[in-house]
Image (cartoon, rainbow, N blue to C red; front, side):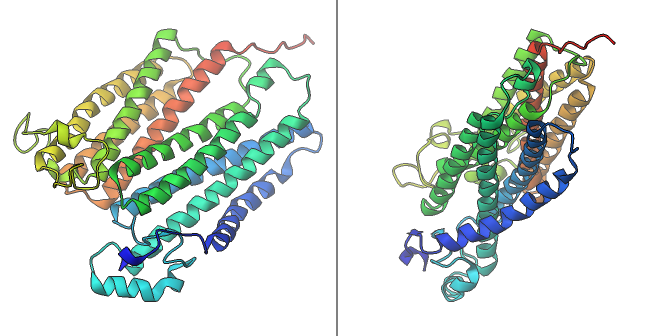
Length: 397
């Protein structure tokens, strides 16, 4: 059984890196093919910027997909489908670990190790390595672009230029994510580690969105500038969204979704019995307190209900921010999308409760959180960039 497995077995590392390189090569080939029509008369630095922007967008899209697949992996209880790291029983694929998986599945047919769960877990690792490969290429491109950048760029070009420092931090962060992924397995789904792993994935998504905004040329005449008050409010909502995502991850990793199976009340009460001290004890194993005793049901109720209460605040903030953005020239679409994201989160969140945590609703809830991060990151950065950009002078003809 999995207790006899070495938690870290680096023997399949080379094979996994090859798989990641092959996965990364497909979107890279598409980026190069898609950008082959850059005008022959375009400046070399501009061509590189366009190619880099396309690579960032593709990587962001695949990272979003990876977050959804990570949620699917967690929600299907496949996180321990391979109980070691980075391979599966020391093999690069579940095929090479078929005997060990069959033995574990025979001993515990509904346990954490089955053939299906092993494949789900390993596919997640393959995709993660592919995204890591793309981010490595992005970092190398960013530094090469910087070394070849002309010194006579205008201010607007500089604001919209490639930042090798952000790219380097993104590469560092994806390595941190890999470490948290390893700890998720070797520490047996330790709630704090899994929560940080999910939040780290959202940070990675935001970092890619930052680079996507940076590489887009700023408009010489922005369609509409936000007031400082509205910009600060967006930042405040953004902070609340991160707190709420942390609480949501804590709900999911502690399997506290079904502690309340009615809405808007919980267990038929507006204030059910809750144990906050146990519920928010940060460093403890899954299902246990730090002293090894089982966690009380009231603790799970507290975890769930706090997440629900803050959701009302976040939804109100998104609704008001969306309304204000819709009143501002050039921001109508962003405001509407914030409304849609908030409504989606409300719909999927309630569905998780009243429908018994269906897989589609649970994965969609994570996706809605990721979309909200993208929308707010983009709005905050675009508003700040366009607020301070100096329009380029157009010579009179």
